[in-house]
Image (cartoon, rainbow over all chains, first blue to last red; front, side, top):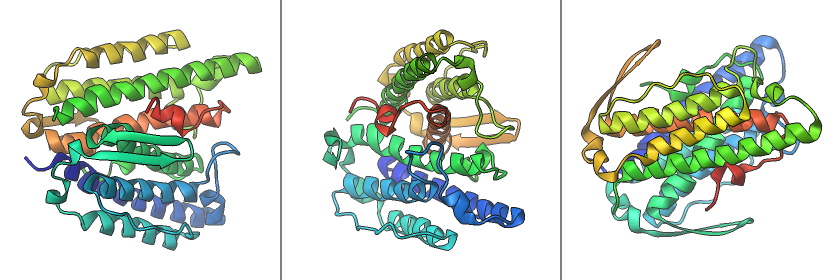
Length: 168
Length: 168
């Protein structure tokens, strides 16, 4: 049996980031075929006080990066949120996948018992690695991945759940 | 260290289902305060060929139920998709949480190596318990939970990510 933290965070999240990358390419083709500016889609929101689609992609990659770093006790790199184009967002997704791939399974040994503190504007939250994984890392990551997908779906991109699930 | 499959599927999914239950109550209060029929929200879609909000709640509970059953090798009960009202959807969410709570951690022993086959209209997919968890159970569950949330968010319900994450 492999390390389940490594399997989830490295293999699992990386798989979904690849799906998002393919969904993003479909969105770009959709914008082109309809003759509208892709920025109209990347700046879209489901409600005016929500973060736009571009930010959903950025936060999804941050969630993946932060999960791997925190569960292994390393310092996560800081990534500026400067992406604006599809090519730049694709590079961000690839950078996150490369970062995940840089972790070995052995780095996750003892992850379940690791004390993890998450500082947010809403407060400081304390977890063990185990509760961090299922209360913070996984819900956060999939929340932003699904919201990015839903914004593109709402914009008429022809995608379905199997695009989100990726190769099975 | 507890069983990570039990922690994720029983504790983790149950936690998010409780969040969804609270989000649903906020949606009902929103509909009442604006004087519109809650069915307008429960039948909403982000695109016309998408499943409506009610179905997202139903499938989220099915995903949780199916994950626990498949990882432990028991037969999942069949639940008819008859819910139409908020009260009925709340009962469905509670039923799913009760079902998850009926599993003990010891039932998940050996879950990582269990052979799991998922039959869908799109084909039959074969997993080990480990790949089933991170390629099917988790992405599916959070996909439908987040989509239910996003539909309510799109409908103007005053909710944010911390409503989705629940008590931390």
